Amino acid sequence: MGNTGTDTDVVIAGAGPTGLMLACELRLSGVDVVVVERLPERTGESRAGGMHSRTLEVLDQRGILDRFLAAGELQPVGHFSGLYLEFDPAESRHAYPLMILQSEIERLLEERAAELGVRVRRSAEVSGVRQDEDGVTVELRTPDAASAPVRARYLVGCDGGRSTVRKLAGIDFPGTEPTMTALIGDVELPDLTEDYIWVRRCAGGDYSAIAFEPGWYRVITSEYDHVADRDEPVTFEQLRESLVRLAGTDFGMHSPRWVSRFNDAARQAAQYRKGRVLLAGDAAHIHFPAGGQGLNMGVQDAVNLGWKLASVVRGQAPEALLDSYHDERHPVAERVLLNTRAQSALARPGPQTDALREVFGSLLVFDDVNRKLCGMLTALDIRYPADGDHELTGRRVPDADLKTPDGATRVHALLHTARPVLLDLGGGAEAAALARAWADRVDLVEARSVDDHWVVPAVGEIPAPAALLVRPDGHVAWAADDGVPGTFALRTALTTWFGGPTDATSRLPH
Image (tube, rainbow, N blue to C red; front, side, top):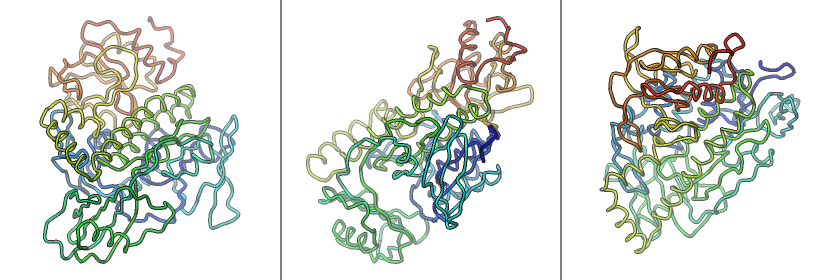
């Protein structure tokens, strides 16, 4: 462990996709982590229904994508408030969304966490948080009333939209109130004569019925200008009555597996870090689940935070590095809240909205409009603030094909161990020499790009760079073209993201 006097390096509250992904990221970097979860076991509830391109790339970067692809089904199109979008396969190897239920995602991530040695404590709910200069004490409510608090260097709240960790840390959660109520359930519909119903609009709202398994349908009803009490129990009868109001029939609905409720409230934590407490996933942001962005954003939060927190725990980077987590991820969620509010507005019933949808839909035939909206949903176009004017700096690195002395590979395959990579593509000899000062933290890879040009979402084709520094989360910290001096900028990037050079090589020329 990174500090004596602690039970573990990091406590993660919540064993959903965000918490489990973060636990895996920390363990890959050798950090001791304990996940505490209030529920006694996984619920098996389907909940979220898919993964977008950037999340698929993240799983590919860690070498575990195949197990998710085997459990889901790729879909060639996406949507913005029910209006179809077309994804460009040139922008990613994984351009199409994967339809996979959250229950399967959690199962696969928990299996991966177990492989890496993550400890998961179930029936353990956070009930108190006390910070000091050296760590955080996490009090737990468990079936055993004598359960001792857990002492850790850091606590990360991944415990959902009603996050106990966020409340105990005193972090504000400003946003907008709900304007509608949606019900969702997995049921049988024996009288449904269609293969599926996709966002059928009607006077009071809209409804959908989509089969994820033979015989079972996910039914969603959305009714506007009525907001249910969030603490009111959700029943199968409420879902049935809502479907009858909207569709005029319940299609013989029976045998519910799971029923829940959501709305279009949109809120975001004012700060993602307060001392030794951090937030990720729904604990940091909630929104209308239009376009299926919530789970994806949480997994990407985890991958952004994981390597930074690990570097700080291991003493390889200053604690200030953790501030970049808020600086990079808060604007991403802000944009998602913006586009989901827009999608909620586009979904409202009425002739004015119908006209707006018709006009908006007519614009989607233009490639630039389609590409802009796809970039929002897939997160492929995200560019974090970064020093340097190269087009790649701050963006996610394209998964280009490479030739190395050991054979063919891909850029994303170089990130399986969650270590940063300095990639010398033929013009980075000085950069490679400088990188020796960070050899304990950064992998140097010499290769050649198979293609002369790379496709960068929101940019287009650019010449393949001569050298680039790729962070463990797959974003580019520094890049240079052939013949462009950049060792000073590289030294700055290495120091900023991965701490100072080792003593033995700290006197290398600037």
